[in-house]
Image (cartoon, rainbow, N blue to C red; front, top):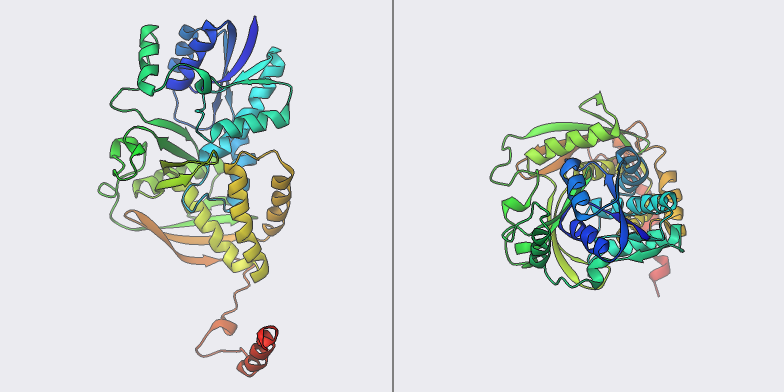
Length: 389
């Protein structure tokens, strides 16, 4: 019998994939990645068994995800199109790595996924898998099966007595991990319609968000966040805590009509309080420490890094080269940032670092000014020379 390892989330699409592949003579081995989503895996396992899966692997990948995917992205300040902090995109190359590993372990000839034919995740998983093992064959049921809508998928599962927590009135497609939540489909497909509160998973609305401001400090060491309000945390606990704190203020909600890799525009909403707080704070330490040329090159690198993650090019030489540059900039990114959180937003209100290049005696316009103003005229003339006729 042909054997396939399926990237299985337990949601509507992948539940259908298990049954659909089984009906076509495949032995289906399911792989579930725990990336920090608040997931009760038992119903998903039961659903896979009913649908015909021969085995279900569940791997706790949270630590690996944070260390090798989230933290490098944070050091890069990677945000796609100014709004998307890449939570889902960062998880896909890690899932692909384990799909390939399990295919080797199970001696499977195929891997499969439940990504749509018009989405980005199919590219991220397949390109990563091809790089890691080009001999494995890839099946993408959603690109070839008979179902045209999510309503048809719901009927298909109901026909086979497979229960799923999706209704015709609430057709959201949700992907969640510790770094954030991606939400699409349903009423969100109309970019004119305001995203309803029932689409969001854990952040407060502007109406329900905390209204009394608070101050929060975040400490960094060599580009990595290590403390909140003076208390040390491991990266996982720190991210979880900031998600709770920021989420209560409605921070981290974004609504984006984005340019998908596949060539179309789509509307998605995101929740990522910790990601937005940490990236903003990280940038503030960099503003103190990095010299002008490095800082400007780092800003360009952030755009390139976000594109690489979004485009599914994690296991490529250009990504490795960017990591080398970014890591070299992070050696002195140590310090503390003070943020003020308020209803629906936040602002940086203070930053300090033992490696700060900021010199008050050079920047001040008041008493103690040590800047030599007499040198400015010569500097300006020399600066302008290349552009003069």
